Image (cartoon, rainbow, N blue to C red):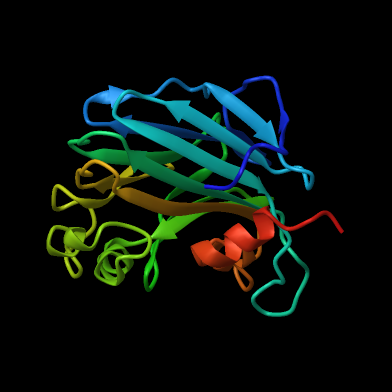
Length: 232
């Protein structure tokens, strides 16, 4: 994903995002194997972002994750936001890939569920004080990205359903109650690469300004540039 020779090693720990309504936790499945929560190696970037790496016999899995500053969609107050960019590079054939994110440890007064939009697969959780959203590409955007062939294999375009209800097919986006979202992706041939961006944001509860939901609709390239930017 990026050179590691000049990066500082850090003590291994699982990738978790603390929000006002719980913790965002991630899981990755290669074929039938769920990767451990802790990576094999962890590096810290000068700006505070972290690069997690898992080495499996079928693939190298990288997670670049950190807090980023992005202007609010409406010019209002900025919202806390984290971006998590996943890269899976196959060493041998990988029969399938699942990347999942879930908001856990919810307070008793929180409620939520799927909160999708145009080209956005998201879940949102709220109570009377806060709103938290987790989002990434929906099935339509996944199909478009596959057709482009830059973020994922071009032959996935024939396997990813562009215009069907989420969760109704083998591949695409699946939701779990109350606040989980998973991207079920096809297999990879040796040397093929897949990349996926999952964003998390939160804000004060305001029905007129769902700033967290708008914030997680961020392109992978934009998130990457923020995550690798030199500290200012």
